[in-house]
Amino acid sequence: MENKKQYATKHYEYYPKGEVPIYLAYAFRPIFLLLAPYIVVSIILWTLTFSGVFSLSFIDNLVTWHMYEMIYGIGSAGIIAFFLTAVPEMFPGAVPIVGKRLLFIVLLWFLCRVSFWFIDFLGVPFVATINLFLSLYIILLVTKPIFQDKHKRHISFIFNLLALLFIQTMFFLSIEAYIKIDSSSILIFALGFFIVLILLALRRVNMEAINELLEDENIDETFYSKPFRYNLAIFCVLLYSFVEFFFPANSILAYLALACFASILAITNDFILKDNNILFKPFVLYMLTIIFLTAIAYAFLAYDYFDEELYALNHFRHFLTTGTFGLVFYVVMVVVSTIHTGRKLFTNIWTNLGVVLIVLATFIRALIPFYQEYSSLAYLVSSLFWALAFLIYMKIFFPFLLSKREDGIKG
Image 1 (cartoon, helix red, strand yellow):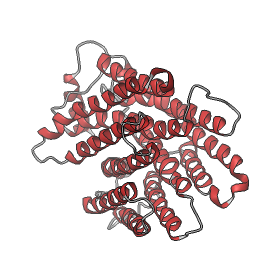
Image 2 (cartoon, one colour; image 1 turned 90 degrees about the vertical axis):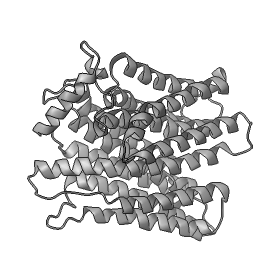
Image 3 (cartoon, helix red, strand yellow; image 1 turned 120 degrees about the vertical axis):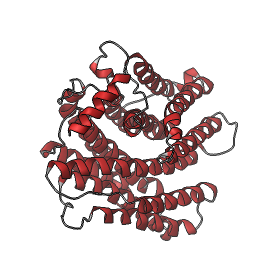
Image 4 (tube, helix red, strand yellow; image 1 turned 135 degrees about the vertical axis):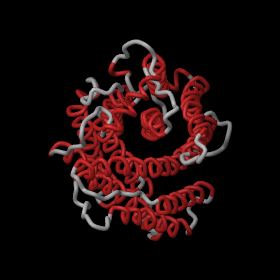
């Protein structure tokens, strides 16, 4: 623990002179303070609008708005928080972004969200420009330290971010009718790359969080996330995503989805340690649940392709959005908000309830095809459960985000 303190103190010497407001002391703080309420507001508004209770008359295409904001809107916030927090730790020479520069990035993200809500008034060119600029700017910020690493250990992140930027550009070109590709299929294509990004990040988060847990419990064993397992899963997800985008409805997609299911499920082998059983420890269960939900998603997609009378792909895909996306954000926000504010990882009935609510929301939403007569109620309950999980996060962790690190280290 002393080494961590020395490292962080030394690292903070790069910060600008003067006192930085605590909410701008590291990237995860302002992003999480905005992202959690944004998730709650977005999903509730979408559900009320979709159910006809409420009207967002200023949005012409509600489905496109919902998909883009759930994928790129929330996803871009995750990218900012993860990379601007992780890069200075992975590369000691990287300068942390704080203060006014961080405020600029956060306000730009918020402007991007507002602009997309009012895209019908502001026009596609303006909205596309600021959203693409944000993505490009973040890539430029993290490219230099990643490429300066002589081992290029994290270069896959850059390739993935560039792919997401390219797909995002395609999306705006499609809604402006410059290219004749369905915008929804482009966003589904992007979802595959976000799943890859999650797998890349999860391998690193697992290493940090679980080894922190082992250290706190005095377990003399080290947890390793085996790269070959993640690489196989990433290959299968990319192959499935490309075939689905370029050759939709191809029968081979059923088998590719099963390959995704098997390869992602295989990652759980990492959690079986030689001398200690950690499978039922709370944070390990959180991480395992993310992997299980992601694997289940592709199993259900395969099931849909095998059953010619069933067309529920968009419903089953919510295992990835409501499930994987939702749980990754919740768990990573919990882990980062704890470890990076100088506290020990902990769980309680409320953090556990947040995980349970997201899992329940996922199954209720994704399995609607099997109880269509209750679909309206299912949409509402699923969204409320999902939102409630992030309200729990706000209640417990906002005080952490708004206060100095408990261990006395800056950041």
